[in-house]
Length: 255
Image (cartoon, rainbow, N blue to C red):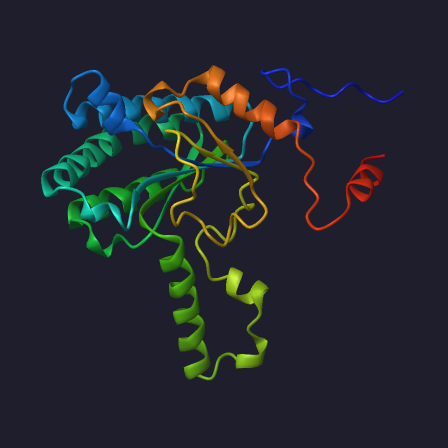
């Protein structure tokens, strides 16, 4: 007799849970505006929502959580807001890394770090080094990141290898290019979540999201809690992922 599937918190069989969840955390500023608060307060509440999301993923045994914290386009925001975001980033790293390390979380940062203050770059390097051996889950933070930058950067590295005679142009295919992208050593995202009501991926993990299930919610990021995460996972669990196959082929493979 077959064993009953393990239930994973939200009443979802564990084999139906995503291994990797990627999230655009949208709505901090609007959350604050609706409460007549400065936008900065929305970002502070957003940090609390990040903590809840990480704790949720640890409890659900989700292997990887990737969060879009600061895009390459976010530099266009008012200088004062960008400065406050950088200060919040520094304070959050100093406060949270020890907690994450204690809970077995491995931290990764993806994106072009060169634009950041050396102090912030050092904190990111230190967080990665401190948590590198952790195997509980991986938390990838996208900072100064853009999907187009990621692909262009991968192409640039391949071009340099060709120029040095280390690689033949005809050997470059989608698999080889994919090996040069960010988080290529991690499973591709199974579920993409965007809060805040917008329904676009905004230059986030363009390559990696090719076969990802997309989920959009009107909830603003500071309001995204365990119940909201449960709802996203239920939506994911109810979908049939075909990867180019027919529905009948997928069902036959499960039999």
